[in-house]
Image 1 (cartoon, rainbow, N blue to C red):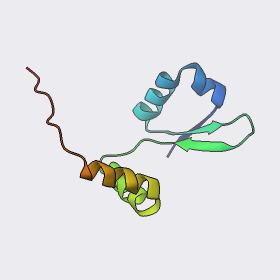
Image 2 (cartoon, rainbow, N blue to C red):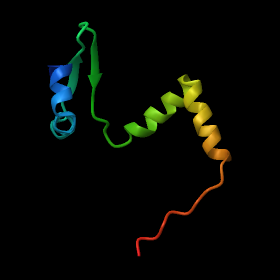
Image 3 (cartoon, rainbow, N blue to C red):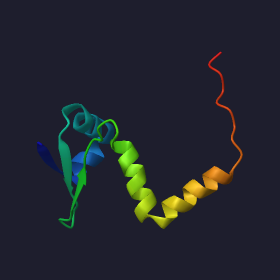
Length: 82
């Protein structure tokens, strides 16, 4: 897997363009923060989003609370396209 490393200032200059490039190329993006910490941004393949939700449910109490609150709220129909 290819990785591209950029400075935070580069991401701040054109966030949408930078993230679109990451998605379109399939490369992971490593962003170097001003204090030299690094963070990674990567695209999700089809099906990865389900695994991400499962991981969040298993490890993040705040995310679980949001999901539970959503489940207990009344559902509104999507507006029709016409």
